[in-house]
Image 1 (tube, rainbow, N blue to C red):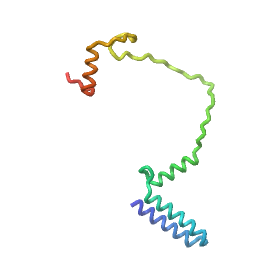
Image 2 (cartoon, rainbow, N blue to C red; image 1 turned 90 degrees about the vertical axis):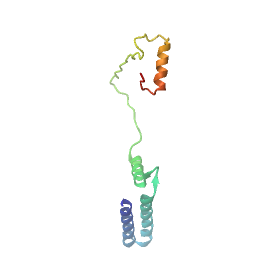
Image 3 (cartoon, rainbow, N blue to C red; image 1 turned 120 degrees about the vertical axis):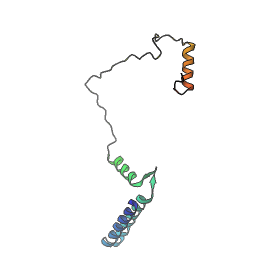
Image 4 (cartoon, one colour; image 1 turned 90 degrees about the horizontal axis):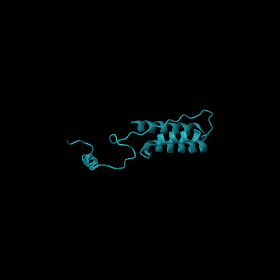
Length: 117
């Protein structure tokens, strides 16, 4: 339905241009309007309507793309957190993993995280 309205509007606009502007110039402008109307109705780029493509193109063209960095005089606050020990109360530097822990890990992986106890 929306495409039909675009077609009516585009054809009407091209007709008005042909009848109001001087002849060589009017044909050129009417062909541009008709081509743009055809693209808006039938063409999709990356599964998005052509009208969205035109809008994104205009945003890209007129939005500033240069980012300037300026050094701030404010100090940056950094907080360092200690990581939590994931397995019980073992010390962090203990590299030994018991056989029970490996069996529990294998059971968890095999059951996709669901407890089957």
